[in-house]
Length: 317
Image (cartoon, rainbow, N blue to C red; front, side, top):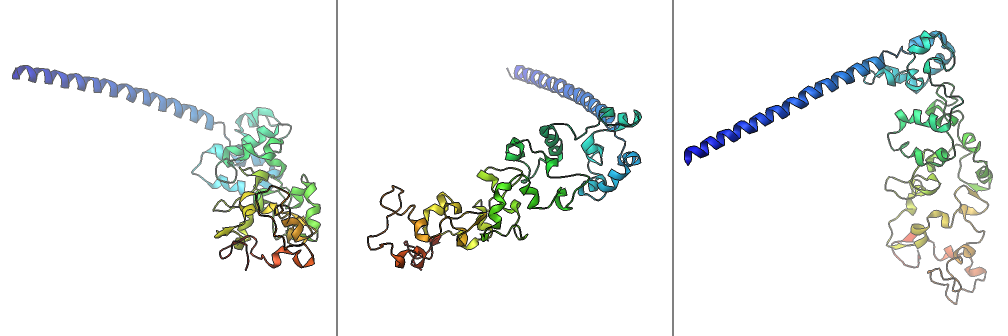
C-alpha cells in the first residue's frame, strides 16, 4: 500500500507539473504576439506625425500665436507621445496633409470650424477630462446647450493669457448671461464688475452636481461660506433655512436694491414669510406682543445672530 501511494503521488505531481507547463506556455506565446502587434500598430500611427516645426513652415502666423500659449509647453513634455504634442495633438497626424500639399480638410486634418459643439468638446476633453474642474462637463448646462470649449477659449488667439479665454470676465459671461448683468449694477451687489469677484468663483462653468452649477467649499458647504466664513458654523442652535434652503432663502446673490442683498426692503416682511401663524411653514409664529409697530419691524435688532447661535435658541446676542 505504501509503494502504491508513492506511485500515485509521483503520477499526480507529474500531471500537475505538465499541466502547469502547458498553461504557462500558452499565455507567454500569445502575450508576445499581442505586444508585437500593438508595437507595430503604434509605430504605424506615430509615423503619421510630422511635428510642429513642419506645421510652422506653412502656418507661421498661427504658430507664432501658438508659441505664446500654455498648449505650446506640451511640446516640451517628452513623457507623452507625439500624439499629445504640438499642433497635431488637436488637429491629428499631419503626414497625409503635408504630402497632399496642404489645404483645409486635406489629409484628414481636423478643422474646428463647421463641426458640432460635441465634436469640438470631445476632442478637447481627450486631454482635459481629468481633474475636478472638467470631469463633469458632459452634464453641464453649457454642453447641454451646445456651447463648446472654443466658444470661451481660443488655442491660437486668446485675449487672456490665463485659461486662453477669448475675452475677460465678466464681459465673456455677459455675452450669453445678459439677464444677470443688470443685477451687478444695483446699489448693493457682489463686486464682479469691479474685478474683485469673478463669476467662476461661485459657478463651475464646466459643470457640477449642484443647481446653477454652483461650486462648494472644501467641506462641501455652500460656496458663500468660502468668503463669509463667520456664517458657516456649526452652531449649537441652527437657523433652519440656512441648512435647508441656503443663503438664497433671504439673499439675492448677484445684486439687490436692499442692503445686505436682502430679498425684501423691510426685515420683518422677510421674516414673516416663515414666522407667521397663517402659513404652515413649520417655523414658530411671532408672539402676540410683536405687534409689528415700528419698534418691532427690524427683527434683527433683538435677534442679531440670525445665521445661528451657540448661546440662545432665539438667536439673541
